Length: 335
Ligand SMILES: Nc1ncnc2c1ncn2[C@@H]1O[C@H](COP(=O)(O)OP(=O)(O)OP(=O)(O)O)[C@@H](O)[C@H]1O
Ligand SMILES: [Mg+2]
Image (cartoon, rainbow, N blue to C red; front, side, top):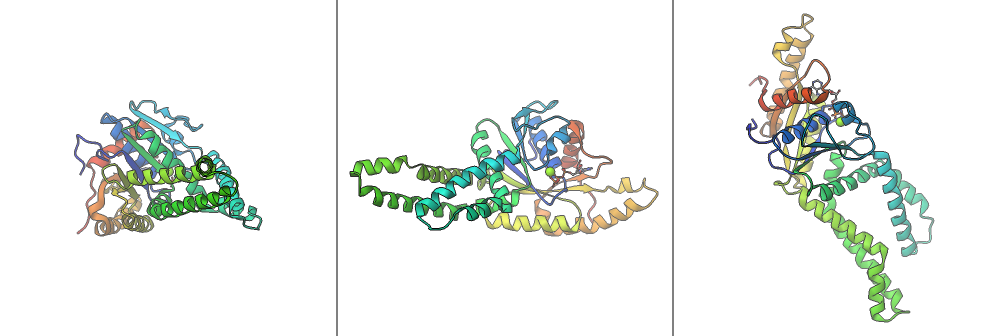
């Protein structure tokens, strides 16, 4: 159980919330953010979801992609990143980058089909989102005590960070060969000093270097357990549990710190007794088996449970109920 005097996420600065679709990630992310803000931390809740879930959760319009204070929650700001804008900006940047590469490598083929494939595959959306995550990590770290990311792209973020060492090596190699190629060409027409100057001015090299720096800095932050935690949400159901188990295995294999697991939508026995149809009692019985499974497979990582409320979670007061459960509710788990 989490002690009362500190935020549920402790003193971490960056928190990511992942899990299967619909399990309550947005609700939990918002509750963790609100909880830390109530402990005097200055908090930013950043949503990178295709649908505008924060607006409906808080009943406040967050569209437009700018950071805004959450009404009724001092110390808490929120932003809903516009995914479509993000993807189209990223697409034009990557297209320019790829065209430049093809031109420079003097590959005698039409690059357009490659560019099309590279910028329309599903991972591209997630890469665009991760690019924004990196910007937020590097820009907002100084302005907020805590940034909570509610993003569907957690798996991809993990993969990219995990692979970023490799990616960094690849970038370094690209920078090196671009330098060599430029030097070779320029030496034919310029003096040595002029060659170095031209290389320094090269936009492709500058672009690669800054991308590499961004990756390196973000990796340092995201793999530091004092600064960052990846949290996962499950419900007492088979598929969401498998998803979390798989995520955690992946996260750990990349040395990315796991903050813990939250179990949402637990049906309480006392609620079941008020339901004459017997449906809830049957559900409770079914959930018992899954709670047991969670205990076996994730026990050491579970930090909180939230009951299934009679209606959707909307507004600050409802989030406070979620926080209360996270801090104090534990369902009976069969041995
Ligand atoms: N403990 C709960 N009790 C009652 N309703 C809940 C609870 N947790 C979440 N909900 C409701 O379930 C729905 C899904 O929750 P939420 O949007 O947080 O899930 P999500 O994992 O973020 O979904 P997505 O994968 O689509 O982003 C929402 O309508 C939310 O209000
Ligand atoms: Mg969501």
